[in-house]
Amino acid sequence: MMKKSDDTLHLGEFLPYRLSVLSNRISRAIADGYEEQFQLSLPEWRVMAVLGGEPDLSAAQVAERTAMDKVAVSRAVNKLLDAGRLERHFSPEDKRRSVLALSEEGAKIYHEVIPIALGYESRILDKLSEPEKLALMSLLDKLEDIQLHT
Amino acid sequence: MMKKSDDTLHLGEFLPYRLSVLSNRISRAIADGYEEQFQLSLPEWRVMAVLGGEPDLSAAQVAERTAMDKVAVSRAVNKLLDAGRLERHFSPEDKRRSVLALSEEGAKIYHEVIPIALGYESRILDKLSEPEKLALMSLLDKLEDIQLHT
DNA sequence: TGCAATTAGTTACGGATGAAACTAATATGG
DNA sequence: CCATATTAGTTTCATCCGTAACTAATTGCA
Image 1 (cartoon, rainbow over the protein chains, first blue to last red):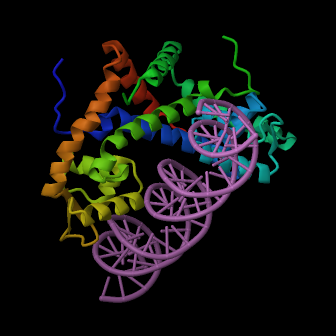
Image 2: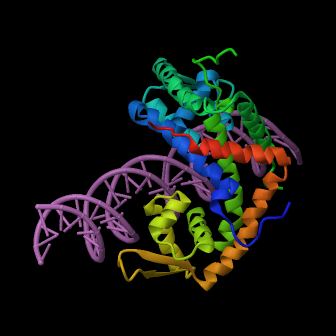
Image 3: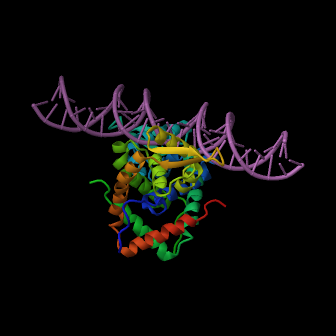
């Protein structure tokens, strides 16, 4: 196939740009669904989301699983603690390491937000045929594996 | 097919999350390729990218084509003007409306950054087979069309 | 005409974000 | 053991970003 010209770039056909716009639009729409109602920011929701499925993680483990950096996790965790949505104690073996879990209140919110989030996801996936969904998942698997640096 | 449970959410399988992480990773990698070298932020690059392909747009038109809001465009444009990378005059028919174009210096940088950006895109696309690329483009077309609000 | 509504773009402001410096706790190796 | 290096998490700082308020120019319609 003819190679694309190297001296112009059409943003609308540029994969990174398309992904960025699409992803921002989706994240914003979902966040609009819970931010105001629950006074919950996206980073805070991500922290709650992992702890809801897998309690007693350390902040570093939360960072790993959410792809957030540790500063963002620290901030989100502290806000959630202030709001009484998280409980924290520290590991007796290593007093630096925190052990985080949703509080009862946090778990309640978690279970209220999940259907909102999944609802938006369905709204998207329902527009795709079964083979398209499979193709999308397989493409995401592949794209996530790509090494972008060296 | 069995419906997924509604009381847990696995971030790693949640489409909006996967898109967000993937898109951020790609944008960051590309930006790392030009930000330091050219002292150019992502919003500034987006403005340059559209004006490089289509000069003499107003700020509002730039906003449309980049999916940025007008404040972000205004800021980016002003930085680019300060840096001598853009030229601005105002339409004689409507003295509010700006007419923006890359300066000579701006065009030079534009042509230097393009291969960097396209290089990263190729690094990604080259990992996909021809049918996979087609599938990806078609999926993006479809996803971009989805109405997320009402 | 002329005054209210609209539009282009900027400014101001409060909150969010990431990098780097910092503190406290633990591991290491001489 | 003790000094140094490493690790967990927090704080600081400078910047970024979006919303809302604002200014200036233009349009529209009475």
